[in-house]
Image 1: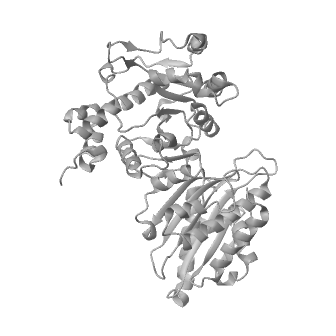
Image 2 (image 1 turned 90 degrees about the horizontal axis):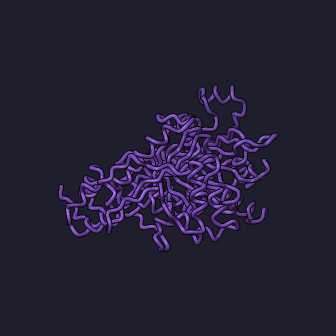
Image 3 (image 1 turned 60 degrees about the vertical axis):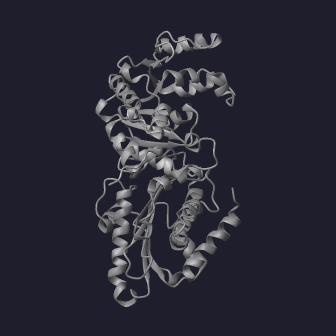
Length: 473
């Protein structure tokens, strides 16, 4: 972690650079956690050239009077209302006199830091809406941040630094989105700030795919996860997960097959019968790990990632990208963000792999610690059968044999109900393997099409995914 001196010097230099650039002029509006961003610009000197107004609508009634009523004050909706109001005011009040040579901006954040009594979630929304050229249509960058320091004063300091970083990046690094994302934690560390949502919008970012930027957050370690919906919109995980029961299928989804979809269907039917689970509220997630996306390389194949993301979206899936190879780490992340029940969907081979002690050697308590962490809070594993292609034998969780020394552990966990057999699977799907589907696609063998959902088949054909000869219009 950088020292406070280094942090202050570098952040002041960024604030001063903005102050000395005559074309940027606007408002800094902050709710909660003090005037931490504005403070840097006034400390740097020359703020009169940049800051038209700074304000803090700290009282809820004052905030409502300025920005309209809101059910939640620390929310994206409140942030957007702040950005709307402040930029419109700047253009309306200042446009006639200086609009021909000024790029107006509005920066806003709405944040809750560590309370006096502690124990609360420390997080907030932050964003900037700006004109890149005078009279231009505005562009926007929005973040969701979580402050990880133990003391409120340190959280406020970190918030101010990341706010200055965001403004500096928007004004001077917007042409390099990857570098822009990386610069957000300049002079900070991932032990102080987590950024789990970033969203670009507007004319300056018309070629930016927000899913790639969300992926970048995970690659850089700025967040443990990224989440986006079927429409590709980036989602804030804590908001989506809050109080909901969650069912997760981990996989490569290259491409999503009818087996993948049947696994979720079968598990959902069983999961909905669990105590305290409202079947209509279950959040079904398809999860890709960074290790899977990297596939042993140094970087992610972005075209391959977007192909998988598009295909999962076509299936109506909400997709999670995570840095968690270990199942128990993903379970812990989810449990911190929902009080609902959690279930993992997996095939028999994955369950067998969990009973390989070599996969848990990095934990001091080995396989016992791994299962202890994974299965606490009554988490259950919903296990889909497999077929032995050589013999035609169907292997199910009931009667499954693992290593001799570990069989008592397996039998104990099975006896306590940690494994749920998916006996409602469609057995005609069991011989289907993703790698076989990929081979047939690349070979031009049309027999792959019934192995995937119809919407996946159509998209693979029309977009030429995975080596398929692209259909002409």
